[in-house]
Length: 285
Image (cartoon, rainbow, N blue to C red; front, side, top):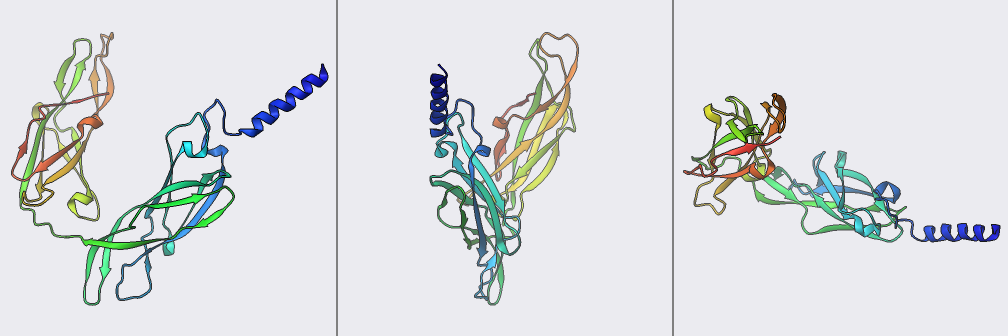
């Protein structure tokens, strides 16, 4: 009887050792081996100097891989990690890895800076061309360098002369028992963000607009001419406000935080037009 029990324990141990990642509980990357990737992010920003310069400090390099590529069960989705460029363009990152080679996809963040030429300089967008990947195995260290190249010149003065307008009303459900809606209070701040890519500037533009009477929200901004290939200006709105509410089954007021749902936070402006077809936006808690 003792021999049977002993061999059963050995057999169970052997079976579990054959499939270390095939478990019923979700597996995190902490249980995997590690690989290290080092490198330098070069940037050809000075055409008068034959030596390459470096990407700015803080530039992000993102590594992603599907959990399924590790051969584990119980965990789905994509693992992501990022490194930041330091002095002299150097970066380093430690990544989950296994004995077999797994391939990470790499995305290098773009940046805008001056390209120095023989007699002038101009702001340009720098990017790493082509699909970037690296195959790694646990307990190995790899070197992966990147070279940023300049794209089209970035216009620092936009020839935009006409505004576009967005109008709507902000509401929330004041009494959930009767589904009664009321307007958001006047002077509630709404944060508006316009991407630097659409403005062709170095940074996103972020500003606030106050809600008017009867919950009215009006946003105006200069827009690209209608003759341009891209003649709309996307923008994002956010708001967070604490408001009184009668919740379902509760006769008394309580307070809750209300925000603009993500599905109703992105719109477009167009020069010379007023977008008023979004009659109201309902904030939710």
